[in-house]
Structures are given as C-alpha cells and as structure tokens.
Amino acid sequence: MTKRFGEVTALDAVSLAVRPGEFMTLLGPSGCGKTTLLNLAAGFLSPDSGEILIAGERMNDVPTYKREIGMMFQNYALFPHMTVAANIAYGLKARHVAKNDRDRRVEEVLALVRLAGFEDRKPRQLSGGQQQRVALARALVINPTVLLLDEPFSALDKNLRASMQVELREIQRKLGVTTIFVTHDQSEALSLSDRLAVMSEGRIRQLGTPAEIYRKPCDRFVASFVGDANVLRGRLDGIEGETAVIALGVARVKVPRGPLTGVATSAPVDLFVRPEHLGITDAAGPCATSGTIAAQVYQGGHVDIYVECKDSSRDRVLVRIGGHEALTRWPVGSQVGISIATDEAAAFEIPDPRQA
Image (cartoon, rainbow, N blue to C red):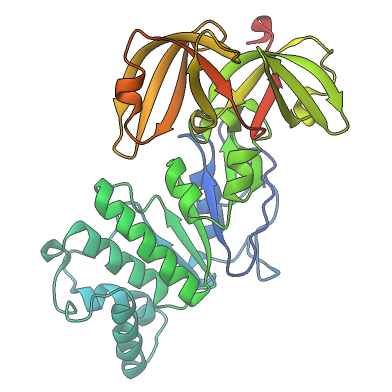
C-alpha cells in the first residue's frame, strides 16, 4: 500500500502479511508510518494504491464497522457518561445483538479481563489500568477477526505497564485473536511480539522474530534503533562464504556478509556490538580496544559502564556487566581493555559523509 498526505509519503509501497492468531508489532519512531498503516487496516483511511485483505477478502471499500475490527486507542476513548457494562456493550448494541446474548458476552469478557463486579461503575471511578481493561474488553466482546492496538500502554506508569503487557499477551494467546500492535517502545515490541516489523520513513526496514531483529539487524537503522548498540571501527579481515570476518585489535568477529557486499578487504567498517556482549579486561593484556572508564550506572541486576574509547564512532562504549562487583573492581578513571566474546554482531559499510 501507498498513502500520501499532500507532498508527504506516509507509506511507500508497503506489503505485510499477518498470520492468523499472530501478535504482530509495528515498531518505529514517530512519523515512520506505523499508525497510518494501522488506520488503513481499520478503515479510518483509504490507500492511494494497494489492497487490504482480511481472511482473503478485499476490504478497501468496506466500512470500518463491517470489517469486524476490534480497536483499542491510545487514550482508551471510553464514554464518560456510560457505565463499564454499557461501554463494553456499545459495539454489540450497534450490531443489534439481542439483549440476553449481549449481557452474557459482556459478563464473559468482564471475567476475562478481571473486572467482574465493576459493571456499574463509570470510567472516572476506575484507575488507569482498569480503564485500559475496559477498553480491551470493548474491543474483544465483538469477537473481532483482527484486534488493533494503538500504543495502549503509553499513559501507564512503568510497573503497571509491565503487568498489563503480561495480561494482554495471556488474553491474546487464550483467544487466539490476530493482533496488530503499534508502539515506539523497543522493550514492548521485543517482549510481546511473535514477529515485528521495524519501520522508518514509510517503509518496513526489517520483518522478523524479536530474536532475529535483535541478533541479526539487516541495516544500520535497525541495529541502532532496536536495543542498545556500540559502534566500533573495525576492519574487514576477509570473507568466508556467507560470513565476513571483522578485525578489531586481537578480536576477530564473524558477521553476516550481506551488508558488506562490495566492500574491499582491509577497508574500515562499523561493527555494531550489544553492551552485554562486551567485557572489561586488563588494559595491559590482549584486547579488542582500550579506554578510560568515564562513568558507572548501577542498575540493580547489572552495572552499565561507559568507557571513553578511540575506536568508538560515538566516543564512548557502553559495557553491561551482571552483578555489582564492577562498581569497585573498575572505578571511574581506570584504564581498561575491552574484549568481544561473541559472533552476535553486525557490520556495515561506513557511510560517505558527502552523502549524509
């Protein structure tokens, strides 16, 4: 599909197939086109070109209320003057479902979202998490073919957001409803999804499982956007079949060859390495690179150590070490070496600054 707003191309020839019962996440920064794609699926917008199909049937000219779409908005969009039960039953009433059947289905979905006994309350009498459950119940009660979720956790605090993520995933698995979820939060996308589509500038940059996206990013944008990554200046040491070998100090890291097609042997490249795949060693010993510890950040289960390093394109390298011993073992100001003990990395050609 392609969708333009004036001279702005919000979606540029995007194709995406979502499997029955799948939890698909659209992940990307603001303005990448993910919400536009969701609104096209819902029928709130019409594509300039391309087709929308649900269960094999073309939906381009089918109005929203006939698509059997369950939609959960960012602000929940509850009717403040209606009770919880009335809010949930609204879609059933609009579909002229008989009252007895309507009451039964409202009762069932209230039990599903753990709000039995809240039927007569108004939205203002509920907490943020309870309001979110009402919005979810309203989307599910119509037995939708597809459930669409537009950043539903953004208004919740961190702890409540985490617990609601678990509840949503449990409910989705129990019902087996096909779900498309929009977020800019990487941790949400990685923890919730069966697959995720990373989007930028109106295109899907990579589609895959959370592990594939995190461990094998296909380009610089995905490697930088999803999770924390260090960018170290290495050298292309050689090619072994579909694998490229990157040299950095004494380290030799094997990465997918694809992104380095056409790069000459011995040419400098950018090596993307996750903080948890780096270690700290004695500066006098063999290492990939070295530097000076600039800062430590205690995170409870691990310590984030920032090292000023000449081989980093961002001046500092982030090393993530489990436990808390690093706080005393490597104090700020220490000269240290950095080791790489992984092949779960990616390398890309250094961009030409004249084309930036």
